[in-house]
Length: 114
Length: 116
Image (cartoon, rainbow over the protein chains, first blue to last red):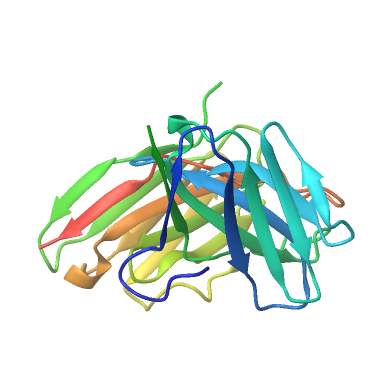
């Protein structure tokens, strides 16, 4: 989910379990979506992206799912590791072929328990 | 490989002082973005440049904020006069845009600004 208050929502998972981080977007014209990971004291780092003509894309240990009907995006992390602890942002962009701006969601904190 | 380089990493200043944040994008990238991050508002786009030309500055909060990109390898974000509500982490990001490319953003490590 998205945060609208002072504190980011937190997802706590056991090391080795799978994590699912969800994001709702509002712009039905968005046709390109990205997940970014931000570790403490660093800038956001690209994880995986997906275009609107796809509903699933897989990377190494990560999968992004897109449901355009309900404007929902999710990031699945397999076999979650301590190094996955970070804040995760979904971002959306309209017109992937144009240099339009990227809009970020509020972020979700993933905490991995040893 | 050098990523996006920002300076200073930390700045503490008093209300009313001028603040200048600097950014060196990745060599060869043609788009540069300034974002501000706070707990309340998350990551907000302030302004972005394409080929050194400002394209969208609608996110710049007010006239106290200005940004320049005099050449392809340098950009500044200036706040004058600074106010306590400007306290945030300011990120610079760059990308290589061409038609059909997604233009993935590469972020610097940020400049943490505290205005007392």
